[in-house]
Amino acid sequence: MENQLESSNLPQTMEETVCSSGPCGEPAVADFDAKRLCTEHFLAACFQELEARHDRLKSEPADSEIVSFRKFLSSSVEQAQRISDRSHSVDKENKTQLLEFLLRASELSKRIRRSPRLTSSVPVWLRREDPARTWEEETWTVTTSRHGAGLVCRHAVEAGGTVVLCRRDKGSRAQARVVYCKYDGDGRRQIGVELLDRDDFWD
Image 1 (tube, rainbow, N blue to C red):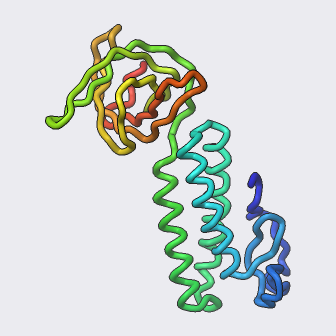
Image 2 (tube, rainbow, N blue to C red; image 1 turned 30 degrees about the vertical axis):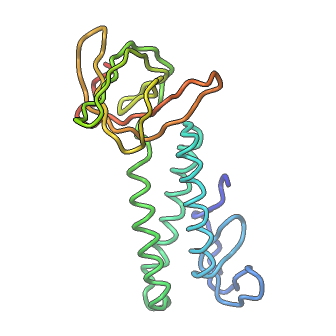
């Protein structure tokens, strides 16, 4: 949900209001989707939204979705950190949940693509160098970014696997990790890769 978390300009009377989640009645400490929530309900909503956004990003890693995810992470982490800092008003169970959420948010934020993608067709050799299953094919990029690319791939690959890219125009080589695999509207398999050992591969 876009703009669910509003971390700035919260009313000074926030803690004087009660949670709007049903008959909760606990003091509201944060704002989510235009609702004032207690720590427990705020964390439950954030965890659910975090995983839902992460799943959407894996299946459709569009730039707009990434920007939206970054905004959500920034705002939710800011509020969670503020609640955590008020340790005197947070019980042990919620304190643990807050720390788990902050760790999970930090982990996922590191997986988000770090630079915008450009539509760009660069000819490459795509190679898997695995003693159990080695192959090579000529292909091309569909999109490129400083830290990765989307490519057409005829071979089956799994997310997390490692491949090697060799530019057919320059001969430069780079290792990359597969981050997703999907089929486009023409039935072609496309994979997304993250470069592991260089960030100047596409000039």
